[in-house]
Length: 218
Image (cartoon, rainbow, N blue to C red; front, side):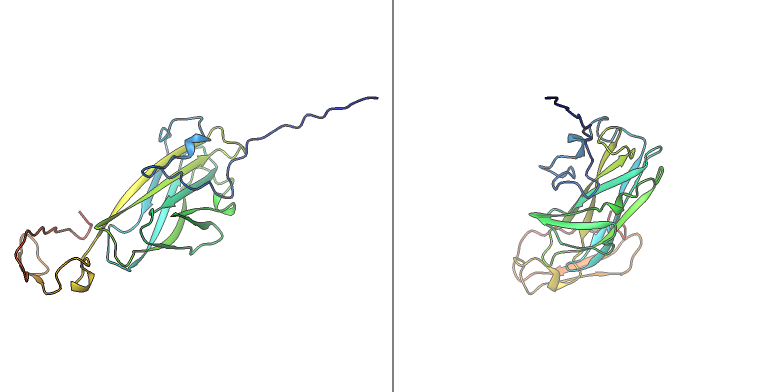
């Protein structure tokens, strides 16, 4: 009796249909260098950015765009999370998908890896709606994979980035629930350039902290 053994090559495939959750580099999370470990994190010559709102009000919806480029790379992926802050709406289902498992994660689809697209930039867009009772600021986290399209995890550059959006209090109804209900706040002149006078009244005495932000959120 003759036994014939056929050895089949095993290819370590990348996650072309979307990476596992929890790889954005957010606090307590890992990043994609666990598998794509040819190079150190953020060691490539590419660019990876989150383009979103610098300020927001409760319940407001903004479009967020993630952009990735890297010379000589030809396939692309990403994962994004606002952690538990707000709601994500997928507006481009061909290229992006949503996975809610504790945190909300937006990631590429197989089509959204744009295979064979050299150098970039490539972009993915979706909508984010601020929560009804948001914190003073929300941090967005994302990881990007600039891959070489060789159907394995080798030769890929991994990037992480984050951006902060600051909450703007637009009126009495937008104040936190533990604030006194009978207060007034105003300034003159408004709009202003070099200086303005800010006045406020509280029903009880106490310490007050006022933060003034520019239109860019600075």
